[in-house]
Image (cartoon, rainbow over all chains, first blue to last red; front, side, top):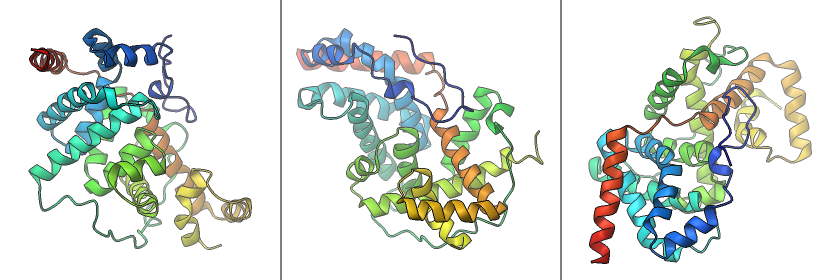
Length: 213
Length: 79
């Protein structure tokens, strides 16, 4: 089965990660028996996404590489505990995000807390309301767009960017995100709203009609 | 409903997690408020752009180090 090519302009559609390839249960079963080749096939399928997740959360390339390695090693070691109640990728994301948060806390022990209350006061969302026009992402090359997205998500507070990463990039449910991060469902919803609004404001710099058309 | 109410329900509206009465009330407001229409539309586009973005290819040296780390650790675990 081939991976569908995605157009960032099309309405939300199935991502490669959501298209569970037919052979995945077999690969997972083989990997559980210690078959490294089967596991390497799974690694090849998801390494880019896990690396991006790690880089978005840690904001450090070296840390992201460590996180990716540790996440895949842990996944292999704990595969016998994987019951198949969720998708393999969702399970892998949970491992990776926990590794990434540990790395981030080690680097900035006093700055990273997902537990503290976050000001959810109303942001000045109407301060710079400008239409983007249709297909704003098409104005940029894919690599340039990728750099813009990495930059703006990196400008968010970790407590916001982790929630956004899990809900809107990895497409975990609100409940899965809450469980992964040890947060309540209302806390996830509140942070997701703030993250979305903040990112919208940051992307305004790149996508408003007046700058580039 | 006022503009601030739209912002409070924005995520639920975009995630289609509202009851039909509230949804209709938001849509009624959007018909007459261009600022809110733009905020809703650009927030929706923000989510779509991130969600549909392809991760960059893994640098070859990073990929090789990952494979090597996996093989080394797993060989050690089996020994």
